[in-house]
Length: 124
Image (spheres, rainbow, N blue to C red):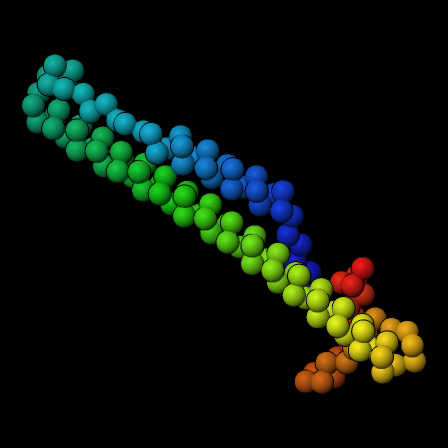
């Protein structure tokens, strides 16, 4: 399995989430009045309905901020993991040069599974 992370796409996703937060976070619902609805009980019901959805908009904006923060953290973790994998592959290549016939085949054997694993491309 190959996981490919494109930083530009992650950054664009974060920007879209921030735009969403800005748009939804500023929602203020006009609840109307007795003058608009005529009957006090209807005005009260409309106000409760409006406040409910205003609260949901605020929650949605908060969730967008959380998602954007999570996206930034995930991108940072992907970058760190990629760098660690490349460092490990380079170290394997150096060991192969040191203990092998002077050149690396680009593969190693996983001791636990017995599978041949390629690390070509990680060291370039």
